[in-house]
Image (cartoon, rainbow, N blue to C red; front, side, top):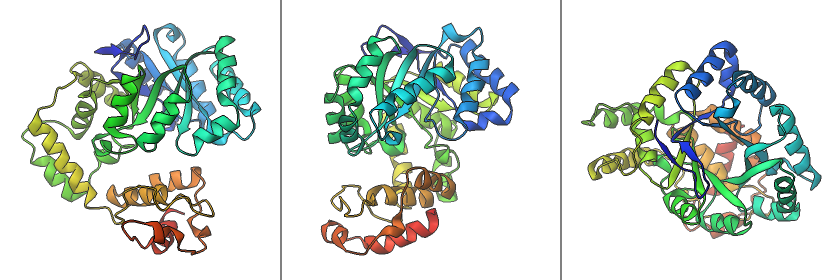
Length: 367
């Protein structure tokens, strides 16, 4: 296992970290074995993920797995600002995480998920004051944030609070220029923050490509799996401290732990990077909606997040995975059918996309 500096902290993190996913509940005994195997092979960072469905059962499973192992790992938990409506809600979610983990101190606390809407809400709810109190009282050791939006809002988020220790982004080779992309990762690292990456396979979507993409993968001269290509690309960036991978069985743990022994920065050649760009461009040609997510169409008078909806729809078609997009459509509370056809978004769209018609199509598929 290779290790990297965790930003400016006096902590070296394993380049591979374990993400906890609800699929682990299918077989608790094997899942406990898997978690302990990862730790025995020097994984020292576990991310419990966003507190969605079945979260309490997952944390109970992790607690059981970490019996006699707790001192060997750091645990990251998320406090969801999107679910907070009152200043006191921060304390409620913090207490809940502490109780579930049966501890009085959180190693790495993630405020999630920041974007252009969540940052003003954090100010409104006085979140940073509550974080200060939690740090002073010892309930939180290190504080960070997850982020999914344009680079300029990342800069605002970093500057909003002076105690950030780390940040978390979704990143795969498909996201090199996207929310916030490589430029955002470099900026965060320059500011002294540890960079944690999640979803290097885009939630498994990249591991099950359509036939047209399979043919390009097979043209490679390298005898690598798609998973290895994805991991090598992420580890190629020295600014990244660790990659969180959701692993659902011991076979995946074995494969990823083995790959982590070769997780060197700048490990890909120019020709290999060009090859991955070819894969990316082939995927991009499968997008039905040519939306650049520039947000010129926003804000919507009734609150529809058009760029995010189009991203979910495009992903469903590009990767042949409707269920994942439906999950986020529901959990994020989208209502494309609420469109009143005022046409203001179309007037502002630089690409003149027929937004109203595409919203109807997206809602029909994702709802």
